[in-house]
Length: 67
Image (cartoon, rainbow, N blue to C red; front, top):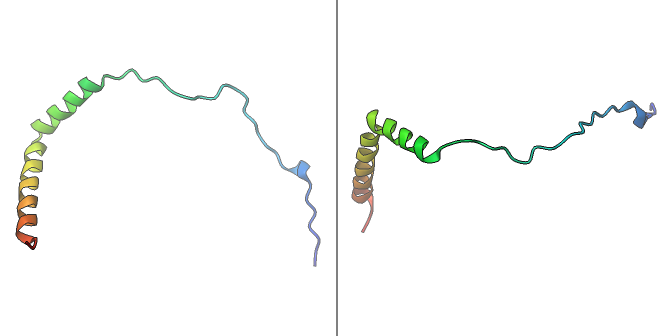
């Protein structure tokens, strides 16, 4: 059986010294971007598809439940 020799000096570690980033600042208008998102949701017809899906899903649940 061969012996294994380990020398800690063989390991190289890189250390970055500097200021850690704790938080970042984003200049974003949440109300304005939400309004644009909902406007696109309405214009693309996805709002109507969601409402129809809710109505059909509720009807299916009502017909398939017991009691």
